[in-house]
Image 1 (cartoon, rainbow, N blue to C red):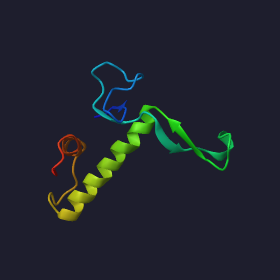
Image 2: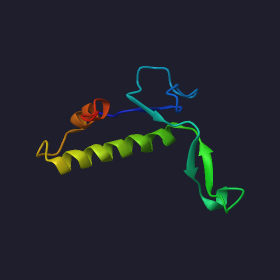
Image 3: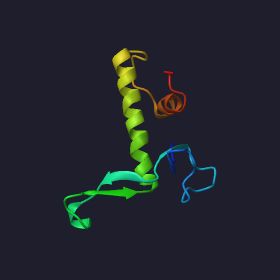
Image 4: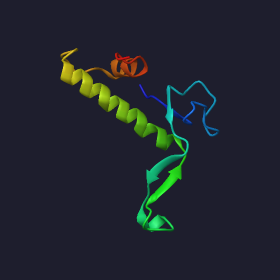
Length: 98
């Protein structure tokens, strides 16, 4: 099942470009994110970063959270099996730690 990720700012407010339909499963920071940028596309090669806003900036936050969850469950041996996509999603939206 495909999951969709929307972008919010650091206060949790939905990004202006976020779709307002019911198709967004998760949101993550995606507004004014400092990101590495190709040297040939920046005006100053000594500063290869740009501040970007998009769902493409939000998605790595979710991927990182999933990686942490996978590491937690594999290290603790809680499930003793590979989690399904639906189980991972449930752990992502309702994490087991405070």
